[in-house]
Length: 341
Image (cartoon, rainbow, N blue to C red; front, side, top):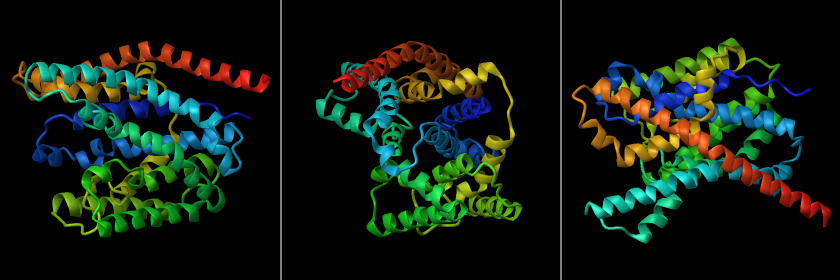
C-alpha cells in the first residue's frame, strides 16, 4: 500500500528556503550569534538533505528498488536529472544575461571561459554549489540507502564514521575550500538519517540516543561559535558540519515523523523551494546589493529580499513546471518507443 504524502514536509521546506534567503543577506556575525542563527537559520540546508534522504527512501520503496544496480538505471535516474536540470538551466540563462550586463557596465569583461566554469560550478551567487550536489546525490544516495537497508541503526553509525573519515582525509589531503563545498560527502550523515527515517518507520530512536545526539550537537555549536573552540579537522562549513547537525537529528525526526499539519500557501512555497533557491542565487549575485541601497532599514530591505525571491520563485515555478513536464513526457515517449522496437 502506497504511503500517503506528508504535506508538512513542504511546509518545512518553505521555512527552510526563507532561512536560506535570510542567511545569504549581509547580516553581521554579532547579530547572527545574538539571534542564535546556528540553531535554526544555519540548519536549513542540512534539513533539506534529511528530507531528501527521507523522500528518496519512500521513492525507492514505491518503485520497487531492491537491488543497488536498479537505482543506477537510466530509466530511474533520468526523470530526476530532468527535474533538477531544466530549472537550473533556465536560471543559468538569466545569469548569462547578468554576466553580459556586468560586462556592459565595465565591472568585469565577459569571458566564455568564465561562463563554462560557472556552469560546472553550479552558477554564480550564494548556494551555487547546490545543483552539482543534487547531481551527486543521484549517484551517492543508493550506497547510503542500502547501507541503512541492510544494517538499520548500525548502518547509521557506519555512515557517521564515513562522514568523520571523509572530514579527516580531506584535512590530511589539504582539500581546497572551493572544491570541498562542491562535494556531497560532508552531508553523508544527514542524508543517511533521512533514509533511516524513511525505511525504519516502525523502529523509533531510543530516547537516550536522541538526548545524546541533541546534547553533543548543541555542545559542539556552543563551543565553536560562542567560545571560539578551534576545530582541527572540520575547518570548512564547520557550523553546519555533521557534528553540529547532531543537534538537528532528533528535531528533524519529530518534525518529519510526528507532525502532519497543513497550510496550503506554505505548501506551495515548499513545492517551489528549488525554484526559489535558484532565484535567490541569481538575485543575490546580480541585484540584491543594488536594491538594498534604496532602503535605510536593514529589516525592511531583508523583508523586501524575501518577498522578491519568493514571488519571483513562484512565478518561475509556474513557468518551469510545464517545460519540465513536457521534457518528462518526451522521455517517457522515448522509453515506450524503445520497448516497441
